[in-house]
Length: 307
Ligand code: G3H
Ligand code: 13P
Ligand code: ZN
Image (tube, helix red, strand yellow):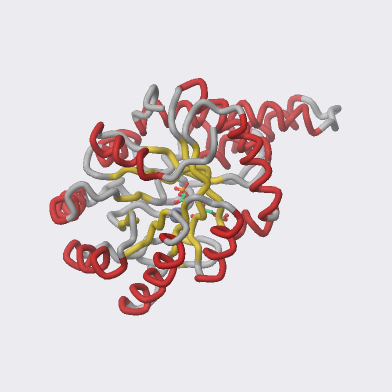
């Protein structure tokens, strides 16, 4: 099946009150693990590539990997740029065949975010490519954007932003954050704010970044085999399920895949110190990615059998 754009996926997800998982990819095992899960669950899926992942793997390698993944796939797959930080980067991946891009101007002054997003939208729409933008700031650190404190999305400004830029979907800040340390106290999302945004933008697809749940069994397993991951805490799965019923059509997950792979590889190293064949630990890591994605599709996204 050729690559899809998010349009049909999100229309159905909005209507059906579920969400599509957007999983970060940067190597073959991750792509394969995600695809095996999506196929088995008969779920649409978004494979997303950050600027850092694109530099790590190389745009050509990523595109060829994803081409191989969709060649015999029976589920819709979108190839998306995660946190594009410039027009040039968005243009490069659009020209390379990505079907969706995020332009993240959330750290810029409002009018500059509008102008940059609009420039990307104009280029992308002429080529049938979807554009996600972001308004508000998540706490936590990504490679190129960092914010110590979150700035929650203003619902009225969100309406103005969508009208002015014509972006196709909007990432909102309601309390999630990137990485493994999301909450110091009790996890809390601003559902009132989310409801207000949905009310003001009816039928419009919203996106939640920073939506890993940081399952404690994987933190414990990694630590048992030598990791030092203390105090890690994610967004509870039931909160994400709730958000998926409130206009959130895309849920971004990276950290949980990193955790699952790392925990399993650490265990393999510990259990089989005599082994030095990478397939012997990357194989189980790929299986761990598959099981993690399957768990997300069932417990968080609700997208099984929606392909
Ligand atoms: O939101 C960021 C993603 O987790 C990608 O992270 O920039 O380290 O590839 P990265
Ligand atoms: P996590 O760090 O919670 O997995 O979020 C990933 C993300 O938002 C990628 O854009
Ligand atoms: Zn993100």
